[in-house]
Image 1 (tube, rainbow, N blue to C red):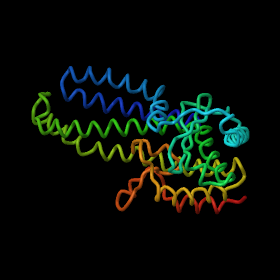
Image 2: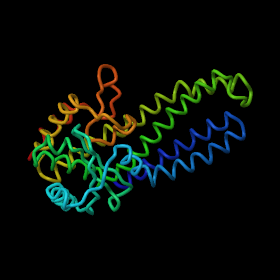
Image 3: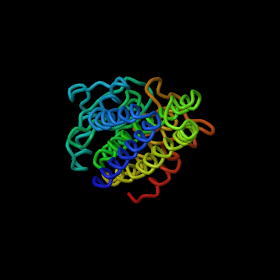
Image 4: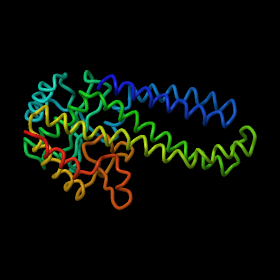
Length: 282
């Protein structure tokens, strides 16, 4: 699983590099050189600092075992079963129930939970959620998801730039008509590419993490019950701050998705996740 996710990360970064260089050359030699510098900085930042940016975005604060002894005991027990190092623990000051894990690898991982999830769930249910997040760490797919979210955001921004470029005639790139034509193609395709990247990675990884969590603690039903409570809790009390491009990091989409927008959720349907868990043998 680790090697597979490392390969996915490489492919995603390579895809971003190719797209950025292609877009850059549409704006002439200067644009091409700027794209090279930008993509190098972005790739480096995505790998080393994206988790810190996300934690700051959600105002998460690191806590000690003296402050939350039960939470630490629970995380230590689950990580022991999963045979990975104890991660750092962060608390998100939000009444909306949710949790996520982040970090480059198991050695520098973080588990973050909201105040709301600790109030809503029983100890067994919270343990199931912790096991889900620990599974993400063990499977090394947090880095993949963080990179994917970053790429999706950048590609979406490229689409906005392309639309402005088409309006203003390609910003003086090569061969007017051909240049504008390629920019229009970028403007149309980039939003679709961004959505496809996040959907393809996020949905499959959630099913895998649910299954791994249930097997780790030998209890699929507590996680299923937790997901039912989280689904109701988030619908009534969605996250009030943060950024929707990072919603895929959470165990459940922290923002409300209604109507046609639910089709583009980064998470699989909650009913399907719960159904799969309840079908597993204890």
